[in-house]
Amino acid sequence: MAGRQKELPACRLQIEFTKKKYNMLERDILERVKGIFADLSATFIFDATYNRGNEHADEFVSFLSDVASCSPKLSCYFTKSDEQMLGFRLLKDGNDTGIRFRGIPNGHEFTSLLLAVINADGKGKNLPDEAIRRRISAVKGNVDIKTYVSLTCTNCPDVVQALNIMALYNPNIKHEMIDGALFQDEINKLNIQGVPAVFVNDEPFHTGKGDLGELLSKLEERQGTTADEHAKPVERIYDVVVLGGGPAGVAAAIYSARKGLRVAMVAERIGGQVKDTVGIENLISVPQTTGTKLADDLRTHIDNYPIELFENRRITGVSLKEKMKRISVKGGEEFMAPAVIIATGAGWRRLNVDEEARYVGHGVHFCPHCDGPFYKNKRVAVVGGGNSGIEAAIDLAGICNHVTVLEFADELRADNVLQEKARSMKNVEIFTSQQTTRVIGDGTKVIALQVKDRKTDKERKIELDGVFVQIGLVANTEPFSNELQLTERKEIPVDEYCRTAIKGVYAAGDVSDVPYKQIVIAMGEGAKAALSAFEDRMRGVI
Image (cartoon, rainbow, N blue to C red; front, top):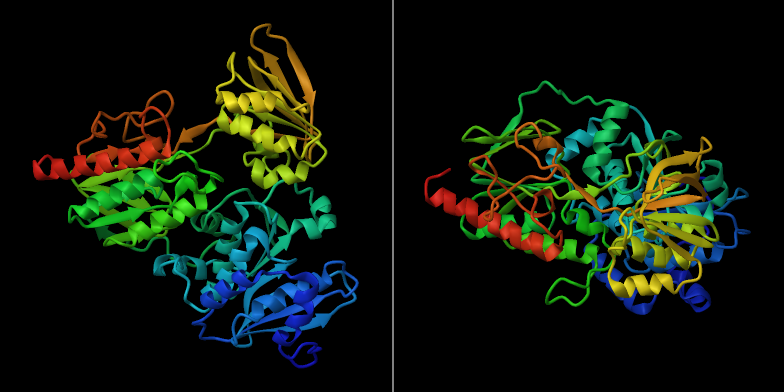
């Protein structure tokens, strides 16, 4: 730290003044943070730099001071700068962790800050296993990653936390979270219209939700890896392999474990699509929860059973027709079992029209909660008239000048209470029997949609600034398409016992053709698949 201005010998000394003025963190929050940091082993420093003239400077100092006050293992160094800087790096025992925050990581990113410290101390609950760590450390080259976020975005923390983990396990990777609201000049210069927006070595890399497995795979493809791809795969043998970490997969794993079977759960993340759901009010016996809370509860339940969990795995190949099924994942692992339960869920359905892919994150979006704030006082469209579409329109109407709802069917499919609310809003316009035929852009961003009236075949252009696609989900069945016959909707057909056409292979939840894609139904189907697999095992069918 030689040559640096040590403005605060221990930022705890500054708390009383700053809290009186700004009251950044409530007392009960600070008490909970104290509990989280109670067992820190290493010493950590928030090595901060800021411009005193910045309107958020005092707030920044107050915030970091409050957090650092929660443990004697935490402290701050503040350095004033003439540049428009407002950020800090995390040091562990005086060494750079590679983790940086630019802005004030409050809101949804407060958890990212806490986890950065806990994970750097080696005490995080969800740290990657050895196989994933080896892949991270094998990424080639010097990698400078910047992630632009909104503090209201529910998808951003997952991306920030995943990239922070990469920085911890590879000294050549540096990652910086940037609050886009405080650095609008950069947002405008880079033409960022959706978050999280990830740049690697100043080049666009990723937009939207993502998990550690997905981001690591993309980084390996971009940078290359020193890992030996031709090495002999690591074989792991079980009684049952469950593919997927959503409600169906978790239910299947728990029910299988309760039968005394050796169970492996192979998933990209626990919670699956549910984790992206903001509010859940129809899970019976749970009047209200969130997707994030439900995902945490699912993990807690898994931990009560001897289930071997392999997260951040992406399936690269399957062989299901032999008695011993084989699942290959990126990184050189193969999972083998006589019973496989497919519960890989579904992802957002896209329009599949011209120019859509080009403008994802630059006018085409799938999460109104994450990207809606970028369209304050602007014009947007919502494609889809189901519950998710109308809810999105209602939310966006409070931000945007005008919201156009476009529904393909002749009638809206949303609940009546939602329809009535949307129709009562003066800046919401609803059209049915509308087919979106093209996304129109100017090379950098969306400027219009081309739509066709299905009753008259007349086409028109709707000028707007962004479009939010809310047309449902598509089953994640691509890895199984060469082994299993799929329906027209790309779903896996199952019988009433969740059995597929192949003995020993079962499917449950949104990936199957079971009607009504609901959390409570997925849980039941997962349990049913596990019981069917156990019954087939007892009968000697598998």
